[in-house]
Length: 335
Image 1 (cartoon, rainbow, N blue to C red):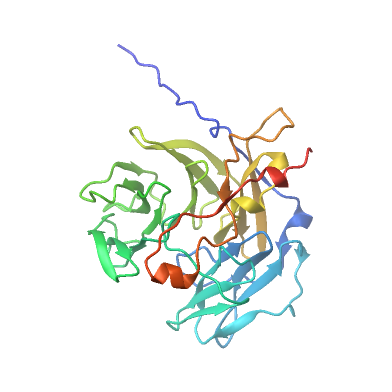
Image 2 (cartoon, helix red, strand yellow):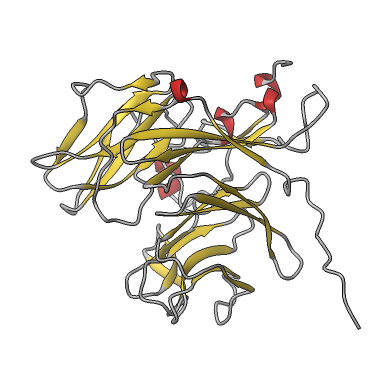
């Protein structure tokens, strides 16, 4: 008896990826050569920040989003660390505040006045870590306690990554004992076994996950790969559903990810990546083809806005609140 393969229907299966034109890239940038498994790039609707090569310490470049084309070698960088910069990230509540972590074991925050970052979950009550001891931990940052822990979430020796999803589950990337790259989904109420586990391939580049809570789609970018894979997370088994792959010619050194409020909704853009090459940063636009010129409500539910849900003092005192949502309809203009 033969069986036909059933293809699961999804409006995100035919997401179309397209690199921008050459003049819309950021050229002549000396991207860092540090062998560290982080994104090396952070983006918000105002700026793109890129970790670059620097002598005498670490540095990164901050460019206005519209400043495309060739970047002059004398363009100022953000310095201060005595070792290489390993990771950077923008404050979600202030587009002018950025944090950087360095090999010198310091974290620096630069930019505007008072702000508060939430934890790893949409409400700030928990965050998760994936450490070199191969354990994934869920931590209550206000009490300083480990709420849940899974030893050897992935058996392989190569690095893991872990992110919270909107419903509180954890999505991880890592390697098997046979060095095959893996994706896994975990229920924080029971970390004994993963809810879902998929093996991808035997490449050795760390997998960087990017999650869109509005669509429940996870995009996975491997360092050194030339592709972006995307998966839809659902409530029914096997929970992690492969959608499609965007493939380009050149491998990526790192990858930035634009928040939803920075996308062009009139073009049905649901994601935008900033792919790092050796000497440039190339935006990649991901769209869902639609014939209608109307605002697409199903693609753009209310999303997290820049306004913080509470002050830092309230969070420390124990208050919990979800993100302040905004509608993207106001950003829509008929094409």
